[in-house]
Image 1 (spheres, one colour):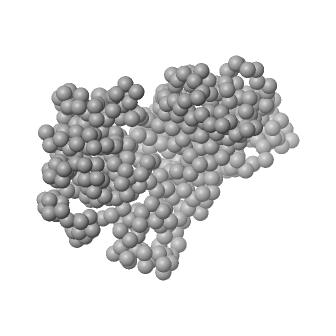
Image 2: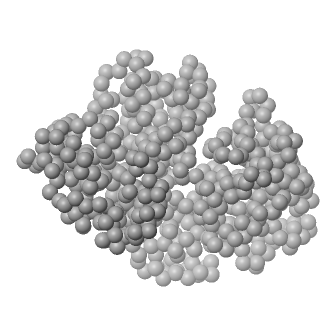
Amino acid sequence: MADFKKKKLGDLLKEAGLITELQIVEALSMKKQDGKLGDLLVDQGYITEKQLLDALEIQLKLESVSLYQYPIDMSVVELISKDFARSKLLLPIKKEHNRLIVAMNDPLDFYAIEELEFSTGYAVRPVIATRDDLLQTINRLYDSKEVNIDYVEGEDAPAVRIFDQLLETGVSLRASDIHLDQTERQVSVRYRVDGLLRNERPLPKTLMNALVARIKIMAGLNVTETRLPQDGRISTTVLGKRVNLRVSTLPTVFGEKIVLRILDISNMFRKVEDIGLESDILADYRELIAQPSGLILLTGPTGSGKTSTLYGSINELNHPESNIITIEDPVEYQLEGINQVQVNTQIGLTFATGLRSVLRQDPNIIMVGEIRDKETAENSVRAALTGHLVFSTLHTNSAIEAIPRLLDMGVEPYLIVSALSGVVAQRLVKTICKDCADTRPATPVEREIFERRHQTIDTITFGKGCDVCRHTGYRGRMAIHELIVITEDIRQLMMNQASIQEIKHHIQQQGIRFLVDDGLIKVKAGKTTLEEVLRVASINE
């Protein structure tokens, strides 16, 4: 048995001064039957996972390890099954004399320790590892054993296991997409984490046919069709989280490429305050969406989080007295109490035709996934003019460029002036890892950049790199914003056919912040880095 005194996790964390009794009570009130207190406290943001592990390490005098760099003894891994390792979140990593060194996420799980000692015959010495590190390592090690077996054509059991492992790794990495790319000899597996693709170990080519079939069956796609692209969706539970998967297949020279977009429902914005707007912009935006009618546009490139912001806005306005209808391509998240329409161009259900039908359904609020053509633009504008609150998106580089974009589509200027209420531009930047954040004095160049935007800075926050963030210095992403509320002054400028530069100069005079300004505020707050802001926004706005 482990040679340390049995203690409760809550007591340890209180002794370390990390949490209060009230926070423990609040976390326990949300505890599910098989949920762990530590996970709840981390999920609620009361502590970080590193703070949790550091407290356990100090209080229990236990070692913490990073598994992805650790020389694991495969002979001790084989002492337990993968199911046991996953269910208990533990992994034997080496043997010292008559002791088994076991990486555990919860070294206070004495029942798991006793069970392991009984089944292996070894005394157990626990060490501490993060939950994500354990899950990824368990999948990697046991998966490597599974994929080395000879696959029988048509046998899908191995494919089921591998598919589950791909999803688990994707969710634990907080990946937005999983790419399965076929080459001549193998299948490349890549995860998009914080906007960047990360390579994982390849899969054998012999597995791909069964894996593709498994994915297609779950997504409701035609298994026999390999010559044409297909799109589908899967709803499932991964690591206790409800996720929707958007499935896209594409025929290539070496076989079908598959991309799985992971839509983690637990990470979806629930309210407007979760979007990440600064307090003054949040107040203006809330006032904007509280209006009974008007057109509100979100702009930005693909993958800038526009849809998530739309969902957060819609959720804010979701009340029984409001009839909310959305037209999407595709429907990414299914929202309770909201009527969602899936675009289907094959049968003629486009954004434009769908919007015409929606207007006959007595809606209060309409969300149009994207304005792509003149007809959709005109119908959206007219809907806003006839007493509906309309949300939609455009692909433009800045908020103000939404106006000439609508004009280019052929919408009459007087209609835009009357209908448009506000425009939000949005970009995603990587956030600094909280567990390895450090500060340094700002350089003269950094100070000068801030001064050009009428801001000042003394210290710069950066991520040193740690096991939690895989030594990148970043973990997660956040949005930076630019909000333009269409005032009477701006409407007058638009009616007088003022140039975009004139309108931009006017809104600058009114103190409206551009994307780069909002980004610099978040740099100053220690949330992201200057490099990230300048990657997505121009200093010369």
